[in-house]
Amino acid sequence: MSDARFITVEGIEGAGKSSCLAVIEALIRRRGHDLLVTREPGGTPLGEELRALLLGHRADGMSDDAELLLMFAARAEHLYRRIEPALAAGQWVLCDRFTDATYAYQGYGRGIDLARIATLETWVQGGRKPDLTLLLDLPVEQGLSRAGKRSAPDRFEREQTAFFERVRAGYLALAERSPQRYRVIDASRPLEPVAEDIATTFATWLDGDAR
Ligand code: TMP
View 1 (spheres, rainbow, N blue to C red):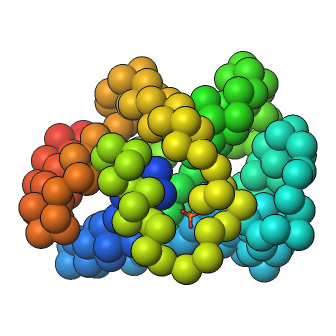
View 2 (view 1 turned 135 degrees about the vertical axis):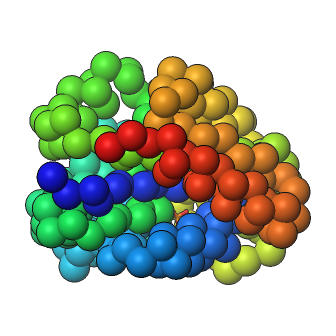
């Protein structure tokens, strides 16, 4: 059996995902594993087109259900074309967001029934779930102030603070429900201690992951 692992990184806007992904990528490569680094929504030509629709303002006012279904359409394509073939070939997969983002944003954030999301999850993924999910957690105000210093806000970044409070609380609830899979990192600190924490957390998880 392949020892390839599927690792995802989650967090609200401004959590520092990009820097942390680079840290994790380096850790995995240093251990000599072949690695696919990808993202959601996106990761395939169709997925990137759906991402542009989902994040851009052309589709402002899209219904919550359309948003949910497009997220899963992009995910179905991503699993079929990239993630499953990579894992089957023994390649590790590091993904910037995955289905936990759907529970957090469309479920807790938009208020869609979590059971409906679970139905789509089973349909699209079968039993496929990440082996490890790193949640970069920080106060919403701090995240939004970091994110606000970047480019023009996308369709999600335009949401109000209350939306992101629900998303953050949702992520923490998901982490509490799946302690085996989740590791919560305090991302309110500067990058250096966060990177050290990630390195330790990752090494401990890997050594304890008896597969
Ligand atoms: P980012 O990955 O560049 O941070 O942006 C992706 C945005 O899409 C982010 O605001 C979260 C949102 N998103 C969802 O709402 N649901 C999902 O399932 C995924 C993967 C992302």
